[in-house]
Length: 95
Image (cartoon, rainbow, N blue to C red; front, side, top):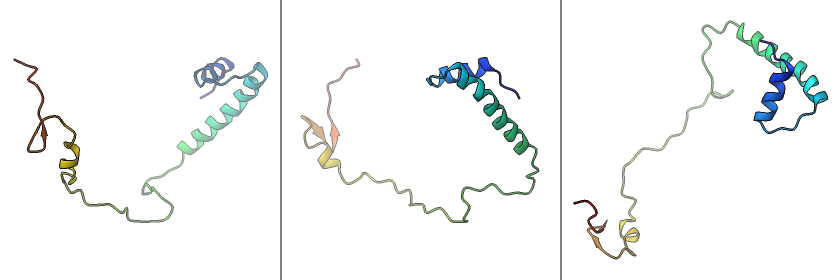
């Protein structure tokens, strides 16, 4: 893949980066070099290589997913004008 001057200017405009014509000319070569390197990485054979999330193997610490009411129901409805068994009472809006 190759990038031209118009593409570099368009990307800079979309990223809201002010780029002069001289900087854009220089960036064309830099971006093409980066894309060339990425294309080389795509040629590497990675069959049989396990995906990694870290360089050190580790087990993710997870908390149990316990469903609770938070033990805050009384505090939540304390300032409500009308409640019934920790539920808000509101006027009927649908007939």
